[in-house]
Image (cartoon, rainbow, N blue to C red; front, side, top):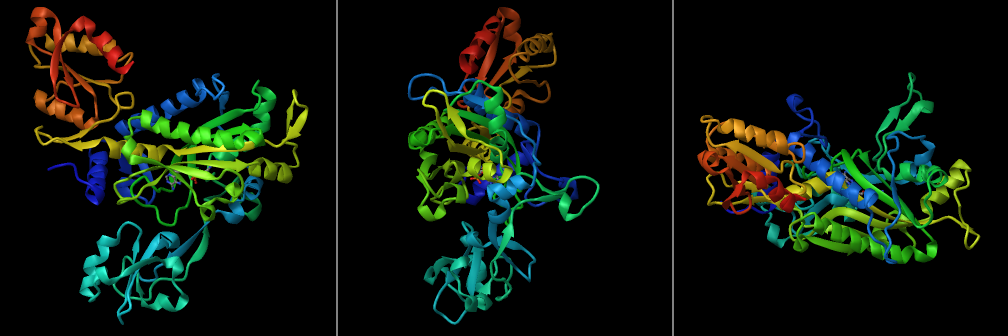
Length: 500
Ligand code: GAP
């Protein structure tokens, strides 16, 4: 078995994630809940490691700016629920819509812009499928006498109303069950307080960014930042996605790592370029291979309402297993101009202008926003790390970058006898203060190595009978399976060299 690709690779990743405790379907014992996922012990650690890296590189030790000095970026943790007026001002209440299509037969709902249709000029049905999943309906088409090879592909949004009755939905066999596209607001509604009237309606945030804009003045008034500066936040966001899919890629509850970088309007274009390059380089530094990442500039028609003017938007995109020959979004870098501050100033009637003490100029800063998906980042790490090595008795392994691996070290006594467990346990008790380690005494050594390979643990240390003679231990490298002996007193130095 070599490393699979495409949907076979996705299946392997989803299966390993569940089997090894990276990610489970939410409410699993009740049959799950579409679009929601829970992170298990290894997945939580992996996600936290990625989050902590981002926080460190963004807030605690921000990048060096073009003038050679470190940028000023501060952290924030704002409420998930804010005053609903904020969502009116941000445009989410009026405009955060996706066109959706219902299937009367299967009762499923699809995003119209992700729904594709196989068309042809024969007197036979046309067939709809979800973007990237065309092959999954080929059998059904052939059964109905339609050869996919003679078809052209268009989006459902391009269909005229008289075509709807001849289209077979992705999950049905009969034509005519799909409705016309309708707008659907993606925000989750809730009620604040005991009553459930319209006056008590509130929303779960669909992005962490607005909490930053709402606190821009607080941060400016209470910390020593001056333009240009950034405010960063990591947290949950909620979107009632019409068609959650591709595992954690598009879910209804997910985490974002967003930073709003406030600058003078004249410098916005320069900072847009700076952050686009800087974010691409950051993902590469997390071990994501260059060949699987691109920076893609948005076309004018694709731009979100807040990015219609100015330098535009570009995405860091990754070649996900389900993207075929293409790529999918991992992070967006947008020039939001002064859209958000301007709207919040207008709606809240609070002055949000910046006063530059040097030039005595008053203005609304422009914003460059690198907005990354933490959950999507985890999917990228899983896809990037998954590998198969047929020479191993248990061939699946996860090649995480050592600094992101959930466990850094497995520590084993070769057998349960001759005092080996005591020596191994002492080593474990010392090292666990610095590194996430697992002490494992169960089953043969081969099985224990295999368990660590699947968890993506970069190093294993085994205490054996030679340890009793010369105080050396075996270090096994996950990536090559190679082993070497080092002095037990040098294990800490060895790990410091490899893991920092
Ligand atoms: N504040 C700007 C903003 O939210 P976005 O492109 O809608 O921009 C930013 O979201 C990032 O959040 C995306 O690049 C993606 O990584 C992640 N994201 C968005 N929707 C998601 C979803 N339904 N499931 C998982 N991640 C999502």
